Amino acid sequence: MKTDIQIAQEAKMLPITDIATRLGIEDDELELYGKYKAKINDAFLKRTAERKNGKLILVTAINPTPAGEGKTTTTVGLGMAMSKIGKNAIIALREPSLGPVFGIKGGAAGGGYAQVVPMEDINLHFTGDFHAITAANNLLSAMIDNHLQQGNELSIDPRRILFARVTDTNDRALRNVIVGLGTKMDGVPRQDKFMITVASEIMAILCLAESISDLKERLGNILVAYTYSGSPVYCRDLQANGAMAALLRDAIKPNLVQTLENTPALIHGGPFANIAHGCNSVRATKLALKLADYTITEAGFGADLGAEKFLDIKCRKAGLSPDAVVLVATVRALKYNGGVPKTELSGENLDALAKGAVNLEAHIDNLRKYGLPVVVAINRFGSDTDAELAYIEKICTEKGADFALSEVFAKGGDGGIDLANKVVAACEKQKNFEFMYADELSIKEKISALATKIYGAAEVKYDAAALKNIAEIEALDEKYSRFPICVAKTQYSLSDDAALLGRPTGFTLTVREVKLSAGAEFIVVLTGAIMTMPGLPKKPAAFNIDVDDAGNITGLF
Image 1 (cartoon, helix red, strand yellow):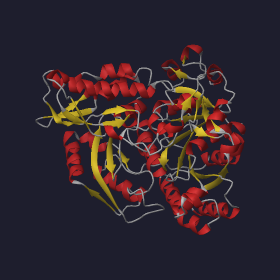
Image 2 (cartoon, helix red, strand yellow; image 1 turned 45 degrees about the vertical axis):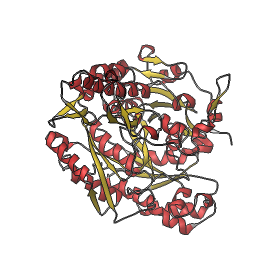
Image 3 (cartoon, helix red, strand yellow; image 1 turned 90 degrees about the horizontal axis):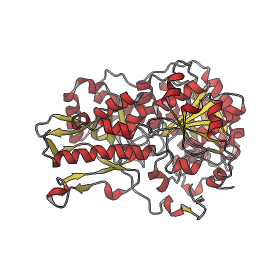
Image 4 (spheres, one colour; image 1 turned 180 degrees about the horizontal axis):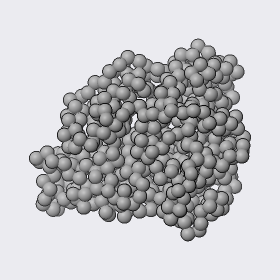
């Protein structure tokens, strides 16, 4: 079979103006970035604000494994399959980060015959949104250090600066750095750090902001530091939020592209300032709901992270209510959860499948707790046996979930027709959507709710630093305690230990740090050994990526 990039390069794309015309977008409401990419401006968003919303479908997955699950591929394929069965559908995705593209993943625009295109552009610079976020973030960092240099009128304690620099590259050497070295004119020396751009609070703010004015206010609310006396210092105190908003003026506009089969796709925003929950922006999702009868969107990594944050943060903040959830899994990944090495996943092994299927069961149970209809999509491989597929279908039926095979990787939209029909039917089922915790609960109570109800933990343990963090947040303003919780933990396990596969229970979830994202309006909870600046593997995907004299890129996924 051809590689993903070969398939993408051979695609018969329509001019993006043709896709826009299908959606009723006028020329002056479209801002072109070449022939196949465009941004949709505020004029169109305002014109369609009163339209009735279509159905909202969330695509999520079991905990990721080296065997692969195919969540984005399924999302894209489902959108194309919807068109195949005569439904008016649109896809809403997050933008890929350059870190994973050049690191482990090698690309994040779907796969096989279920991709969004132009694939190379989407995986690389796209329309520059992430560059704008990086620039806005580092402008604030520069203004913090300049304030220290210029007399420090606000009495900022250099030891208590909370805001970090970012770069959209996996670079472990930047996790801990010293800035301001050199002469007196080179700044005030202090310890700093870099995070990957998608972990910036600016990313979260861009994704959650409803307008430029909302964006500017949220930027101003970023808690950047404390003074020597312990008082908070916000971005607005440094008078940086206006300039930052100016840098983000275009980045806040949703991006319009298409699939291999010319289904419209909005790709905008990243994972809301935390690892492992790649939702697209509120603006993109809300716009998609106005443009089609069915909006298919996805959340990052496993349902314990991505879906939970989509439901408990994004839906809470944006007033969204999904009509159905698609849970993606593979037979191979479930056998891996059952203890089979990656190299031995091809042969039938019902015992290992039974052991590993508890991971699928956990995610079905969790999603059902939200009161939503669930469709399990098995991303089919040629090595899957009838007995293995029948076993999974039996589990789904017992758990109250629908079951469908997906072959969109090999067959495009045609391979997702059964899934599309199941999803359409699920959207008509009764739902009783509810959040996993109430706003009124304390910070610790919210963390406990997620730890016990979603992850399966028996208890939560707090490091001394985390307890101090919580006390400080609660002392700042009582409104902060009402914010939702954004947990950073390993994506590979339901627990905070990446090695615990399947469905671990009775473990202790360890919270080591708690941070207030006052602009994004949530509280970040760091657990286990999670990093906000990933490193590169021994053989990064960058090894395989190249470009020839004609500008043709190879090796990108």
